[in-house]
Length: 185
Image (cartoon, rainbow, N blue to C red; front, side):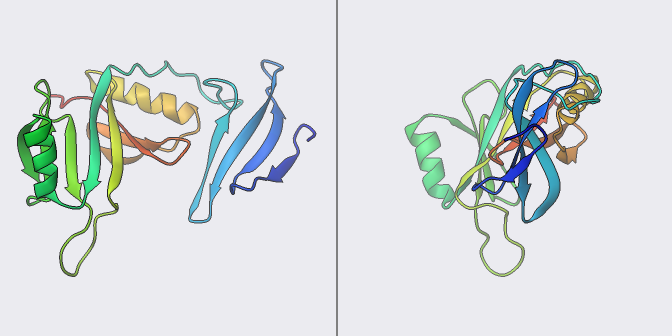
């Protein structure tokens, strides 16, 4: 494949060979396209490579894994497994009892489990049983959160699901990754 040439991949993406004008290195860049999404996502073979002309930003510093969120079929069975068998402490519920939180002892919750389907008519949660998202603590201040946002944007990622202390991005496989700072007072 010649430099600048694109071809369709069997997995639905577009593969292009390009040359980085600043470093003089060649590499394969994959633009992930979805039939249901209008935003293009760039992934490259060079570690942490930014697109030409992208603003520079300080790298993200992940302080710790914040929590993992799962969609589940049965909250009673979930409580039995995580609380009664694994010994995690149940620390609360949310969304009118549709989410249960578990802690290993340090944080309010290390694991949240949400019912994958609501009973009766009306809007349904967005998931099926399985991974909902993984959350990473990226700092202690809103300035740290803003720096993390600049970093991911400089690398072609589009933040979504923003709250005052968090936002999400998708990894190369589409998994939702939450980046947050603990509640700032």
